[in-house]
Image (tube, rainbow, N blue to C red; front, side):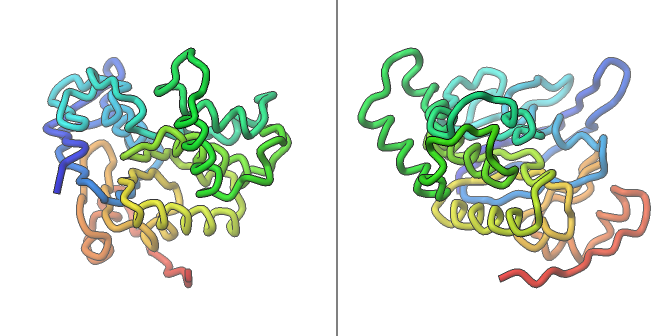
Length: 247
């Protein structure tokens, strides 16, 4: 398997406040990785380091085989940041316009080509938002905005999809449909890195877990994680995982 992200001995601080300490792990092609940990544990910071949005104080991050901070092939990554559905709620743009933004890395300031339009149409079909294309995104529900943002990310035809708590504020039915969509995208070959605040739900869907609280307490198979003490170690208390009956 090809390594997409390789994190080696990474430490990062905000001033004198330590955020991450001596983190080492990798993400392989086709993996569905879930990152979990308590609030303030460094999950978003680690994701930003993995995407080259931050540089480590110590250690190295490789993205597609090159230093993450130097990586410039943005079309290979689809990223939906934290609380993105809330921020887009104020955008006076249609779903069509938002999804088209996903081709910026390809088209730049140029007019969209037939290839760009085909990629947009494919993304729209994949997430089933064709009936919403002419509606303003600020008039949609949280779940609908969420799917539009995924379509924007997919329009770039990414190899890696990175999502930071994308289901925050979304109802349970929309969340479950969203996870079903992620499963289909992963089966189609897209590597996924997902930060999710709901531990119980996350462990029902992902294949690999990275559990952290500044330090990495577990990285590996989700079943091994459920049998380990990593969760209680990371959270500093007993934490029961409740099974969910998902299709």
